Length: 384
Image (tube, rainbow, N blue to C red; front, side, top):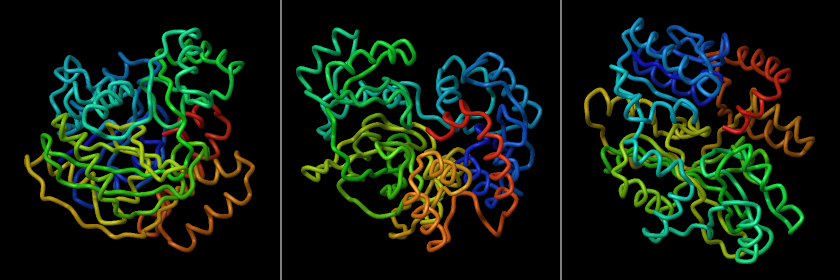
């Protein structure tokens, strides 16, 4: 297959490029930056510069259509929220001749909308924090009486830690108005003291679970809850069944990942959000034995895929360059930085660094230099 992947600057996109290249697919990368990280891989056939899906959505769609025609693309895999949001719409999908690797529109938007996710989990009996929709600063004050302090405020549709705020007291409720103007509709959630974070990644064929993989976060940035820098594979039957129940109820088609937080007080897991796209810890799943990109392409190419139920426990993978090193330096936490580097040296499993495909390591250093001088883009990428 000839496959087009977006968001070439991120290590998870590099993981897709490597996986599909090794499976003898022809992979083309698109990004608004010249020479994005994934383009340095020997498995990348070509890279194209496109308009920003966030700043210029119409131009982005036009650019993608042009590339799809010129490169005779069979499958488009959107990798980040802005392009996934655009391409998830049935009207937009109909403008493309290649298949677009996204779940059905209704299922996609149920996962993207944290309040709809909460309602579905409540109906399915999946444990989730108490959640209320915020209409105004005044409603946030009323909600605080129900949830108590502290509580969490975050956008209805977001990923990572974008727009995330811990509301500690009545005085800090005033920040809700600022967040609403920047991020739109917000939700307030009961605060769950962090006792660990677990992700369950899945591949479904029209609601039938075909592959499942669980991992726990060892180091995340920021530590209050954000993308993982060091993570480890393990099995958790309870959470695998919960994620399976969620995706099956929506007749999910393709990949998705459910994120859980363990309550430090009780040890109970709570589903926090669902990503209807590839996730940042994807290289760990591949290293552990569940090659989601290859399985996804097989599903679209042949219409079927074998069940994958086994993988190795205890595998650790480190996002060292560029983001692990940058986040460690930014946080000013020398202990965290040493922990990140030590994990990588001991387990020898990295998102980017590879002797078999060495050039992306140089690309990561190049990207890190550019991103350090471009704080808005650095913040955007770190939050994925």
